[in-house]
Structure formats: structure tokens, C-alpha cells
Amino acid sequence: MGSTPLRILVTGGAGFLGSHLCDRLVAQGHDVICLDNLFTSQKSNIAHLLGRPNFEFVRHDVTDPYLAEVDQIYNLACPAAPGHYQYNPIKTMKTSVMGAINMLGLAKRVRARIMHASTSEVYGDPEVHPQPESYRGSVNPIGIRACYDEGKRAAETLMFDYHRQNGVDVRVVRIFNTYGPRMHPYDGRVVSNFIRQAITGEPITLYGDGSQTRSFCYCDDLIDAFISMMNGPDDFHGPVNIGNPGEFAIRELAELVVDIVGGGSSIVQARPLPADDPLQRKPDITLAKDRLGWQPRIALRDGLQRTIEWFKSADLSKYRPPTPNY
Ligand code: NAD
Ligand code: UDP
Image (cartoon, rainbow, N blue to C red; front, side):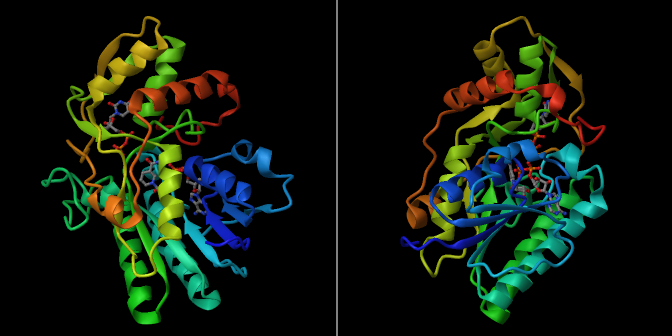
């Protein structure tokens, strides 16, 4: 990266991961444009950055073109929680596909390097475990998760076609479940639900019997990987898995959260497993270790403790439940 400040565009920059990325880039002295339509986030995530001379917020929807002279683009704009992306599935697909086209068009025009936030959902309900990048996935193309999964798969296709056809310098990361402070408390994701429920003494809601697994990465580890990938070897475009290989049954996560928070929340089977909900998920991160020298450092208990502290300090009444699906 060198010591020269770069002009960096972060789409989805006011969201959970985007705001942590903006924090890091602003602290490094870069000139950061945070572009977001605030669909699943709020300005409070970036309020502390608004007065900084090297930070600028632009309210904009990535389905419309946006032009700016920049050196790097991190493309994160997309609702990420199932309840959020299923709220308006057609818009979700448009955001992934048209957002990718608009940002790739910009990268091509100004010769910027672009890093795209893809997802472990490209593997669908995987038959190969753990998932290496070479696994092509098992996605139901007409199911309720398809707007997100197939949107992200199409965006990956666009990244590599712009690279082959137009020489755009692309980087693709496949993010596995990531958690931490500034997750939307009402996004319906498992970590935010369980922590909120434990703090308020409500029952912890397992979907299904809680034997399905996920692997949880703390946000700070993920941001390290983003920066390493964006500034990594010239010939390394990915896709690369980024996640924590520690694998936990959802019931284990519930027990851990209750153990840390204390209090009397019961753990209940609240509803059947949602349609197409993957039964297992764990990243093979051999490639990230080899090419980026990256691996996560923060254990689940430590990361949960930090996240729980943030949830306790947050004023939950200030968060708008953006959808009825939380
Ligand atoms: P988030 O919902 O907090 O952030 C997404 C941001 O994108 C929000 O600020 C939202 O307002 C914005 N956005 C949505 N549609 C937009 C549009 N059309 N135009 C402009 N802005 C728009 O979610 P997150 O967890 O921070 O996810 C960030 C990125 O990482 C997403 O692309 C997501 O798919 C990807 N990802 C996240 C995870 C995870 O576990 N957190 C896992 C896999 C992939
Ligand atoms: N889940 C759950 N209770 C909740 C929310 C989610 O048991 O209150 C389950 C969900 O069915 C899934 C897992 O937790 O099996 C992770 O869900 P999340 O929405 O966080 O992410 P994703 O399914 O996209 O990995």
C-alpha cells in the first residue's frame, strides 16, 4: 500500500462491516468516501467519522451509477441478513448485480482496484465439508435464499468477466458468518437475536433443533483480511474464503451466549428450520493462509464478550427495525 494516502470508495460503508472498514481506512489516513442508501443501517454507525477531513458520506443507491476519482473500491453494499434480503428479494438481486456492474464500470473507467464482498452462501447447503474455494456449491436457484445466493454468484461472474475481458483488477472474498459490535440489533441474524434475547431475559429462539452448524468470525479479524486481500499479491484475485474455521452447532452458540450473559433465558425450539437453511458451514481457509498469511485470532467466547458489551451499551430503542422479519 505504501505511505501515500489513497482515495477509497466503500459501498455499504455505513453498515456493520462497512463502518468497521471505514474506521480502519480513515485511521490509516486514506481519503474515504462512504456510499450507502441506509437501507439496513443508520448514520449512528459512522457518526464519529462525520467530522473527519478524510471522510465523506454519500447517500446513494448502488443500482444507480456513481462516478468518482478513486484508487480502490470495496463493494459491500447489499442487505446481508436473511430477513433483510428476503424483505424485497427483487431489489436484493438488483443491488448485487446492478451494483456490481456499476462499480465494475467505475473501476474500469478510473482504473481502480475493486474488492467484492461475496459470501459462503455461494456454496448453498453444502455437500462438501469444510468448504474449499474449488467447491461449486449447491444452491436452490428458485428458493427464498436465491435472491441473495444467486445475486452474489452472478456478481462473482461479473467480477471475473470484467477481469478477463477488460483487465479490471478484481479481488473476491467469500465471507463466512461474521459478528461484532454494530450488527443491527433487529437484523434477525442468530448472533444479534441470541444476544438481544439473553440481555432482555427473553427465550432464546432456536430454529429447528439447533444441530445445524455455523462458523463465526469476529469483525476485526475480517477487516484484517479485507485489507490484506485488497493490498495483496498482484496476481491473486481470489475467490478466497474468509472466516473462522471453529464450527459450532447453533444450540452450542445459544448455551455460550446464555453462559456469558447470565440471567434466566430458556432455550426453546421456536420454529422449524427455515427453507433452504444450510445444515453445515465451515470454511477451509488454507488459501487465505497461504496467499495472504491471514488467519483469525479472536476466539468465539472473546468476540461474543466484546459484542455483548456493545449490545448492553447500545440504545436499542434508537434502532429502526427495517423489516417485519426480525
Ligand atoms: P449490513 O446490512 O450491515 O451492511 C450492508 C450495507 O449496504 C448497509 O449499510 C445497507 O444500507 C447498504 N445497502 C444495501 N443495499 C444498498 C443499495 N442498493 N445501495 C447502497 N447501499 C446499500 O450487512 P454486513 O453484515 O455489514 O454485510 C456487508 C457485506 O458483506 C454485504 O455485501 C454482505 O453480503 C457481505 N457478507 C456479510 C456477512 C456477515 O456475516 N456479516 C457474510 C457474508 C457476506
Ligand atoms: N437461527 C436460529 N435462531 C434465530 C436466528 C437464526 O436458530 O433466532 C439459525 C438459522 O436458522 C440458521 C443459523 O441460525 O440456521 C444462522 O442464521 P443467520 O440468519 O444468522 O445466518 P445464515 O443462515 O445466513 O448463516
